[in-house]
Image 1 (spheres, rainbow, N blue to C red):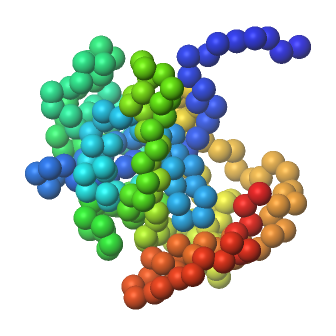
Image 2 (spheres, rainbow, N blue to C red):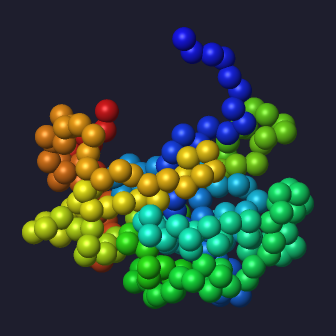
Length: 235
């Protein structure tokens, strides 16, 4: 029998993302988050309206989504309760946040040059997605207290970098889910995935290339793409 409940948060479990952006002075900011989901080569990021990452992304319209594996959990945790904002916003002060300028150094991660955007990638992360901002969506517009508190930012991936260790053998354009061990946050705690799939998937019978988005070709230089809705297998 289920019970009625009122959890303060609904973080049932999503991959951690380290978002790198550029500050006004050209230095790099790096921030952990886990409110993200992907459709094709688009990603929706759920971010606090007043965060430094949000401010940087809205200003520059560029970022890198670095996906850490379970092996980078300590690096991610070192970034907890830090912000690139100075002074620290009042709501974050109450939660114990402190300002930190060089977050790459704090995390023990290595910045490396990106190919299509200005913010750097995090070398140690097995997945690095260079992206540009395509849309801004405000949440809770009907509520005077919550309006502007959070935003859903749509970004388009322009370049995907993968560690060879997670690529499917003989198929350089596919990630092997048996090798990829994403870092998961569930109700503010870190978890990983148990090795091996739980059950055979009927959906996996559809070849991955059937989901290929026109954004893949759009990311290539001097390529003009016409959208074919029939090619998108999104239910």
